[in-house]
Image 1 (cartoon, rainbow, N blue to C red):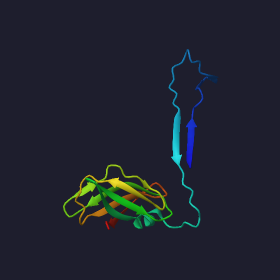
Image 2 (cartoon, rainbow, N blue to C red):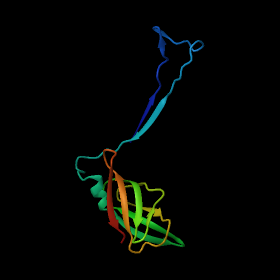
Image 3 (cartoon, rainbow, N blue to C red):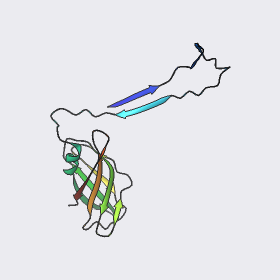
Length: 139
C-alpha cells in the first residue's frame, strides 16, 4: 500500500487578517510525501534480517554478462540498501540494490566476473527503517 499525503498550508495571517497577496511577500511550500506501507499478518513473526539470511545467492552467466541471483523463498519482502561481493582481494558493490519480493527471484548485474570464493555482504532495511547487516555465501 502507498500512503500519499499532501500538505498545503493556508495563507499566513498578519494582524488577525489573511495576507493580501498584492501587499505582502511570503513563501508558501506544499509538501507531498509518499510512504510505502507493508501489512504483515500476525502469523509472520520472523524478522526481516532472518528472512534475508534465508535468501540464497547464486551466479548466473548469460552470454558475456554475469548476474548475481537472489532467490527469496520466504513470505517477506526483503529490501536491500547495499549488496557487495567480498573476495580475498577485493570488494565490489552493486550499483542498484533493491527489493526482492516473496517467493521470487531477482537478478543483479555484476560489475565484474570473478566471483569464485566471494561472499555476499548485504545490508537490509528492517521494519523500523534501520539497517541490519549480514553475510551469505554464493552457491
